[in-house]
Image 1 (spheres, helix red, strand yellow):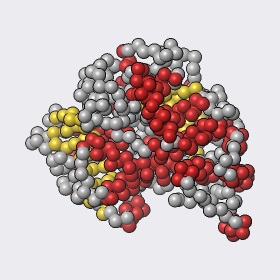
Image 2 (cartoon, rainbow, N blue to C red; image 1 turned 60 degrees about the horizontal axis):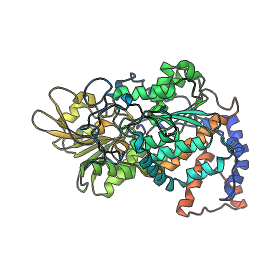
Image 3 (spheres, rainbow, N blue to C red; image 1 turned 30 degrees about the vertical axis):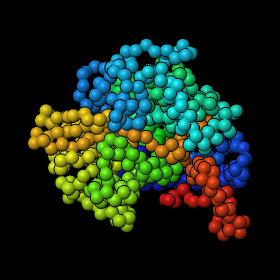
Image 4 (cartoon, rainbow, N blue to C red; image 1 turned 90 degrees about the vertical axis):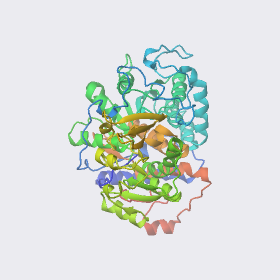
Length: 550
């Protein structure tokens, strides 16, 4: 849910073939949006969904991390044992995260060492406790109430089963909102196997509820480094089942399959990736000529960038910080590293509560935006000794170094709003002279020899989904986009997509947005024939060119 600073926005290829195809489908697609009550067939949907390829990879390359390097964790006993209760404390305890409402039993047995069976007699899953399924079902039902657009898409397409025969392997945050997406894919005909893209974001009861319905879920909150990769492997490598579609968040599943199961990877019909980290990995493969399947870049779609990244983080940053630290923001000095959409959302929220907000940036355009929005743009070293809170959201690595952490004042809070745990140099803090003290779920005091301590949240991993929850409605927008991207890639005729990375067409972004307007009782103004002719537009869109930046 982060985006990199300092990299130019991806530009859309202006190939004449794609432009003509977009013009041809616009007229046909208009019938779909004329009436709010009109029915849409999957055949029509597939016809209009002709994605536009992006230009070749960005210049700056982000190297693949070693298989396990990125997932270092707080030192505990070696082996497969799950994190101790002091580290992955149940969220029903005082001050704990609401990201997983699991029971507070003292069972430290790793789910990998348990034998569990759901009510259908299946044991093809690995979750914390299958007995939590009923509670997880209630969580999913609550989420469905604020994801009406995705539920509407499910009802419209359910009879046609556009994903019949699709075998989707997914690696995302496993939350109630994601469960609504997974169950939508199943309702549309897909078979799914799922794992978590973050070791702290899984809602155990939701994972249990999905497993109870027959979805093979391999995830639990507080996985170890070894558990993480084991779960991914179990999703991919199972007898009698071979995936043909990937839905990824961060690129770890795609990377694991590419490295460990190249023959399986070559048979994949399409990849849908929603994070900036995963998108960079796809572009790296594409540039090296190793991407042998088409991929859809959901991260840079308008409905992801301008809604999930901006509005979701604007609300969830405060939620995560409040739940973990009880901090009061009025008068606090906060530095936000990165002023992309995630950074903009964080800054707006903090400013509204009276915080003094600084911004660090490498991109002059984003820096100028920050200045015009009333924020002072600084270098981190200029304010490192005085700030109370540091929030990273760049998508980069080593944004906050050990030297800077050494110079922070006592009681400072350090956290990350990017997808990966590479932005804060947490590894440098795991040295003998520093003491780690777990004070709450996902909250550590790192104590220096002189008694100074900083408060590190979620061990430098994604704050909002590790330590709190995120707004359901905005995730409905992203989930609807992901579902449509999967439908398109799976049903696309041979030759429509080459072995490249594609952006969603503007028309589809507009369609996803239109599905969500009914929630606000919003009424769009319609162009007259004269106005449409004057602007050179189809009355039903798309209303902006592909290169338009909102």
